Image 1 (cartoon, rainbow, N blue to C red):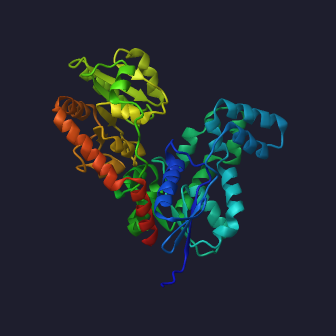
Image 2: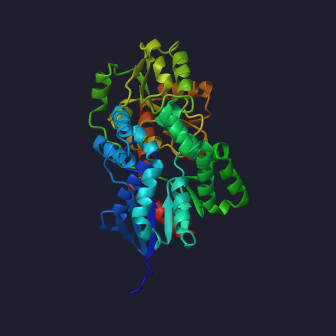
Length: 425
């Protein structure tokens, strides 16, 4: 029998694992599910496959307002501040994530420091975690890898997402004093520079960071061997109700052509391009309708176009919506690697996306994936093409999308890709 020297791998995430929502939380949630399918489970968060011991280090898998208040109580020595934070969290439970970023990070790091010291590899999901861990472990010869899950610079992501940083009030000024953006930027850049390897879903996905994180472009030009690639995956979406039932609930007729958009209604996601395209198409085709789920600044325009645009806000049954649509449009101006596109492939509905960033990977991969440049003219042509093709070809497109998903993006595929990536360096 061959004796393997066990290689300890830690996947470090100072956040709660979430089934939906995207970003690092859903990425690690899905990866954990995939690893569980192909590896031996030693304990709740420890798995072994061949000579690799994979340890998931995170803040739990449940998120509740009670937990939010409990975390805030630890932070606050002053009752008035505690009440302020608790009330603020009760209005929007998501906002606490940004405030607790470094608190949770340090808490999780200190709790697991002894174990991290004996790891061979630690994979991080943000540069801040890598930076603080590197400082704590000092001269330990541990390989530290990094995956950045946002197309934006991590500091810009915090700024855009954080309620606290965006408001002009006393508490915001306090946060800016404790962690001014120039300090966050320095920590982020040093964390990126400290990384032994940078992990991306595809080579094309780096493009967006060339524009948003100048340091990434510098590192790549100096040593492109520091970049590793691991295609992500996800569970297949399920549709609980039939296509006909959902369309009927939304008020559509059998022959209506339904265009679906899911995500943030903003210019980055290209929603303005899609809306302009639909307005133009409606002049020729009165049976074209737009359904959108999610939120964003452009969702406020819904009031002006209620005749053909059904705005649903946040929804749970995205599988039902995708199955009921004739086309799922993902018209990003810039793309990293949208898990929503991969989920949509599992349903099969034809997809239109743009030849940008990580989505360049999808060109010519399936007839059910129409890849265009991010402009209104090409989007109109693509929608018209899908509207007018025979039903038989639409069914072929659906089957090709499902097959493409099964061959590349299942949880097992994701886990095997990740294991393969861990073995490369």
